[in-house]
Image (cartoon, rainbow, N blue to C red; front, side, top):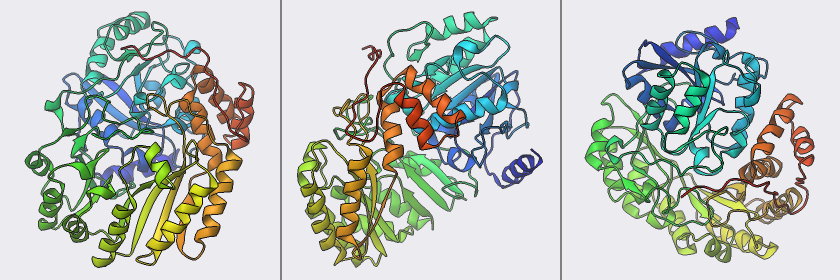
Length: 494
């Protein structure tokens, strides 16, 4: 514990932009991953700022132990108080595998993980974050309420309802009456996700720190949502009205003059109509800039030149699928001509390599699609060194490819091996784990039972074997093509 206190002290010294505040009602704002990941989350920092700016409320930040220890009791960065000391703990959950971190933080704090086992002496546990856009139901057995969607305005309304009530039951009743808030004890349907008022856009992160994935980088969104219709993606044009653009002048005026590293964040940053102007303006300031998403069909010579000016040495974009046929299924606009041109422009601007992201195990994919990928990437490698970042396909709720089966651990591993063999000596091929992608898939398609099974898996050591045993009991298997059974999952209310 003394080491953790010293680590917190050093990190606080290095932070720039922290909002110092004390208030009558303090919320424990928790992130179920280590500090470096949590403080790299624009959404987490946006909620922190929303609470700190609200009269009468303040937030203290808590994170999973750096080593992911299950027995470690997290301490708040602001006062070194334990998680159990807060009347309300609000978790920001980005994706399915972070459920394990939530469980470890509660277990380490002595707070019952199962919602039904907590009493009025325990904190009220809330959850929100990107996971709510897809399927937050695995959280339903662990948290008291789930704030759906864009929460920068809704989280303050929720805190006001909670503070005004004298009993836990009254708090739950009050939360259940809020639009876009799911209370498992009160509701059978998930409400639609909330959309923040355009007046509060763009989101930006108040705190910069060297101890993150994006060291000392000021994070700001250039747009929210997306205008594209990718069939696997939750953040598609039908979500919350599609893409909402932040004006260029507003983006630039919000970036502090002393910020030397800037991260432009969004689901479709390169689709911003003024993105090249924004990047060049930041280059004129002497900034290093990172963009969270680059679409190959948006890359031009001027755009790649601007990226080179702000420090890009690797041009990173999305290949998406292994073949043209697969990309058509995914409704992606990336075409061979766009990727070929990207390689040529990266070489022209003297970048070190081209990095491409794609998925394996998309429904209907065959070895022929893998071979087409090998042939095409081989061509690109003759222009510039190529690296592939691969993720196994996991179908998500609220997408056109919802409920499509997972290809299977063995199938994904076999196709990845085929791709690596074909590209040996031609491209660097790296992939996330097929086993853990199966775990993600089960939770993405699952419900409360799957979430509760994670508790058993985490307490049994958190290995893949532990997850497999826990999910086997529910009828899941990851060795062959699998389709997660749905046990009467609620539909989203519209």
